[in-house]
Image (cartoon, rainbow, N blue to C red; front, side, top):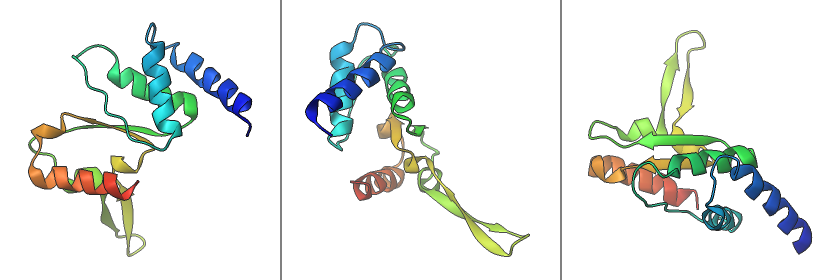
Length: 129
């Protein structure tokens, strides 16, 4: 794909995201640049300014899956990574993937959970690089 085609597609994605996020063109463009470079993005700001909306809108505009993890003191590592559940009908274990298997994952307030759960999330994040 030549640079002009890429720029045109990036503009379409930015325009689509800006239907949900108004007045933050620089932020939207930077977030898209991070995703296109296969990077990870940390959005830090005060409550109520659209961080979750931005992540959801980017996922929707790019046709990607989105999951949000609200970290709490009682969250377990398996709540993040998923688990295997025995299926009595088939006699086999079914894998139920956790939210870290989405294309875009919003990890909210990771500092509020236990170190073991933080480690499970960060190991899964590191493995996806």
